[in-house]
Image (cartoon, rainbow, N blue to C red):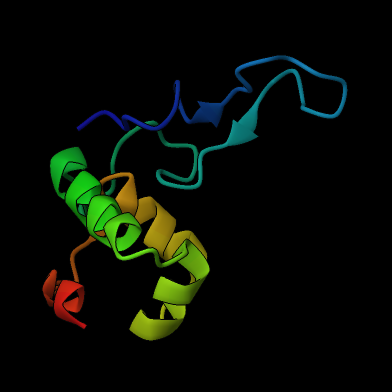
Length: 95
């Protein structure tokens, strides 16, 4: 599957500015390959459910990541729909 996060393995700023490289940054999801790795599944609807549940409880991303014992970066990716195939569940919403 084509990586929905980038354009041919690179990320570009929405508004160009001096400190952002003109050739873009390497995509942190596909590592520049342009293809979604097999160990990552993409489900933006489930990501919205995760994020909506967290926000409705008034929990910040950093607070939630501490509760789940994962990095805020990984949790942010999951809330955008990128799930690492590690038998993840959504039972944390009940905590």
